[in-house]
Length: 239
Image (cartoon, rainbow, N blue to C red):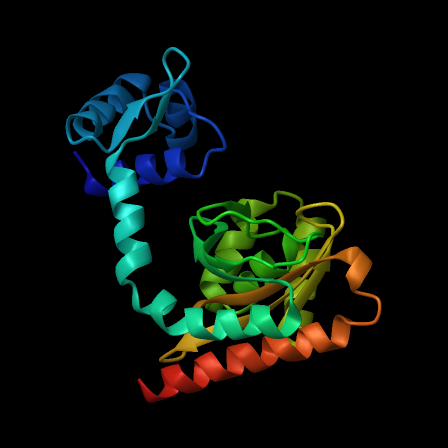
């Protein structure tokens, strides 16, 4: 039994918006359903998966909570970034977040929520496809080239839309940051800037704001986010 196959199954289950089925896993992995059940039995025995609310559906098991908590408590990335995120949120009075790439998604791993009554609310652990929004597209733009092209081909089937996205990613690379408006959530504007450790992309720092506050503050929010990422990158350059 392949360990890679077990990881593929866990990754697929984790990025689904709802509990999934063995049939969906078989279709995604292009293997017989009987083989899926054998792999699920191994994962179930180790508590990596559990039964979903609906019959014959599977979701991540309780050990997933332990793994997530361990990551949030002990990873170097969050420890380094959080003080700068706090300063960014204080300076802009908007929501600041750290997003990382995982399984063709941008995952929020840290967030400082704005104190304003009208604010953007995101959730730690929430993921969005790497083809939507400032955070996702900026992550995609600064990935290694081979990884980027492979991801675009998996995310988008239309060659025309692939070309449009790749052109947009080139623009993000040239600017050094990505901006989006209403791509993930209606009425939300965002700017994202990449952070690196040893020349390897670690994630992006993102500022999110309701569109209604952007008209006279867009440059201020972009500059503040660029400054935040520069501070983090400077720290990592010495680490």
